[in-house]
Amino acid sequence: MPELPEVEHVVRGLRRAVLGQRILAVDVNLPRLLAGVSSATFKRKLRGARIDAINRRGKYILVELDSLDVLLVHLRMTGKFLCVGSEQARSGVRGDAAVWPDAFAGDEEISVTAAD
Image 1 (cartoon, rainbow, N blue to C red):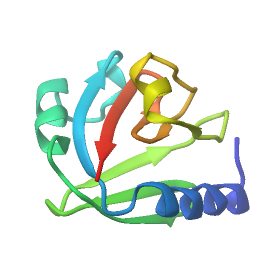
Image 2: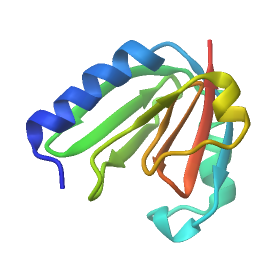
Image 3: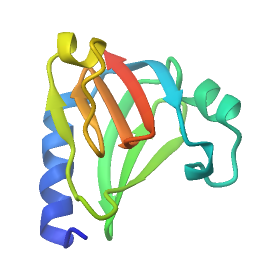
């Protein structure tokens, strides 16, 4: 499990990679990872939202959206986000946490596609 400095490092990298981008698509393959919300509602709330800020609260990453919703992400045991180009993201290359800059996920079973 990542410690606070590693989480802060990820937050700073995410800010450089996706701040200001819009979420184009959301895919949830393991709905039990969503706390208190259905897959349909989760997708609806994220689709079309712009990423306005990325912050950290303890070991949680807060992705603040222009809709005033906040996507809460925990790095779990691996503690990493995988950055790939848009062609790799479209071809299904996925990491165990997130794919940036054109797609990202809070877990390997949830992916969100984002673009300018």
